[in-house]
Image (tube, rainbow, N blue to C red; front, side, top):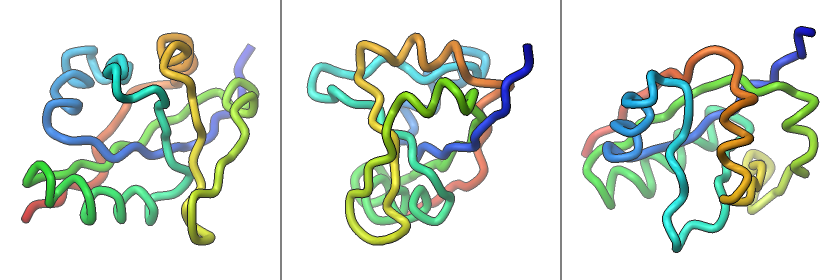
Length: 116
């Protein structure tokens, strides 16, 4: 049964992008101990903001990835607003990331690259 997808975005650094590439562009890597939540964002504008304001200053480069997830599955994670009207994201507990990855439809793609 085909499920309707929802498009999400995830800003990542080079190390995380390398791990995504190593997965065949099919999954996000496990969270680190200090990262209890995986939070994909709901729109490109917010992902771009995180990439340019946080990843570029911290790592010298930031990538914005785009991917589709089964909408029925994604709906189990309430949308969290963490600031302004564009700052919407899903909070996926780290221990559920592998399951989340199994609901990605197609491949994760890089849609923007930002440098210092």
